[in-house]
Length: 113
Image 1: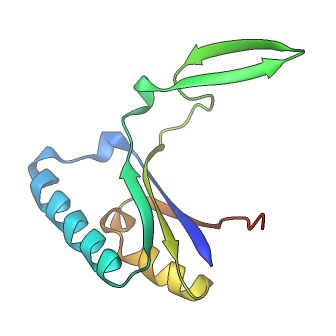
Image 2: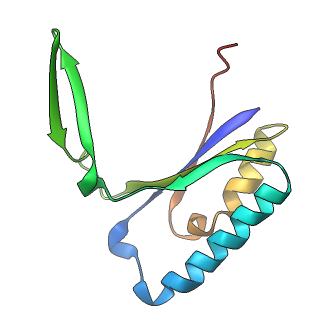
């Protein structure tokens, strides 16, 4: 079963002094789930200041800069994993380095087949 692991964090809590260590932890974690065959995809995202939101209302399209919701936490990246069950997805999510200071939402990907 496929799950998306959505990593949200508070960018004001980022410690630049810890950036290289965190990067190395992410590289090791990513390599582990690649080696296990459980990783489908994953990417870090640019900051919310680079986002554009699209809405269609009454047939009219509008765009606005940035995220729609006012929140301290922002979506920083994601992994998609293909695992045997929710318990395994939760185990993997708990090993994501930012899980120590951020939130990792684990959500099943709907099977449309």
